Structures are given as C-alpha cells and as structure tokens.
Length: 120
Image (cartoon, rainbow, N blue to C red; front, side, top):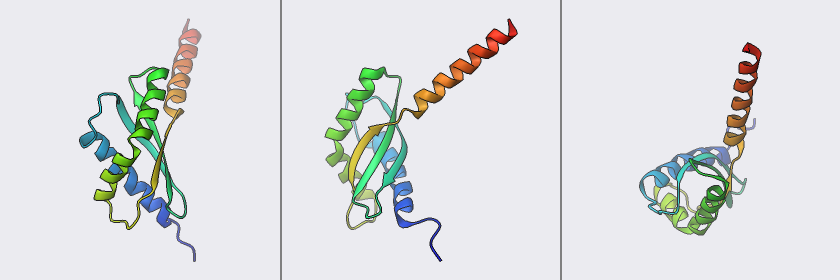
C-alpha cells in the first residue's frame, strides 16, 4: 500500500514553515520587500526545491528584483533552513514568483466591478 503523504510532501511542508520563519526573523536585506512563501515543491529525490513566493506592496519591477535577490541569497537562506531542519542533505533552492495572488486580486476586482454595474 502506497503512502498517501510521501516524504517529499512532508519535507516540502516543513521547508515552507522554516522558510517563512527565516524570512521573518533571519534575513535582513533592505532590497527585499514583504515576502510570503506560497508553495514549496521538492523533487522526489529531494535535490531541488522550487519555492514560489509572493511579494506584497510591490510593482512588477520590484517583484522581478525580489526574485533575483532571493536567488542570489539562496545559499545563505539554504544554510539558515538547513540549521533548522533535520536532514542530511538540504535541497538546492530556486525561487519563482507566484502570480496566483495577483490573478485572484484581479478576478475579485472584475467581479466587484460587474456587481456594481448590475446594481446601476
């Protein structure tokens, strides 16, 4: 019988929690905005972690810049997370911007606008 919740999913979940803590308490880079970790996808062999983030209160240029800075700081962040997790080897971090928050906000705006137009 296969496990419903495999090791890579458990590592992803724990890594997301630890990354949130590290961003909140450990990383103090003035180039970074308010970052939230939306999802962490770890490969089956735990070699690579794709980290999807959202930057709040930033324009498109700031979002791209934040992802660039995070990928530059990936070894430092990886070291901080490795100190907090009990793994023999920690995954390589790759940061990506998650557009789902922006898309959701745009859909909410369009729905509110449509509702307003119906009432008029």
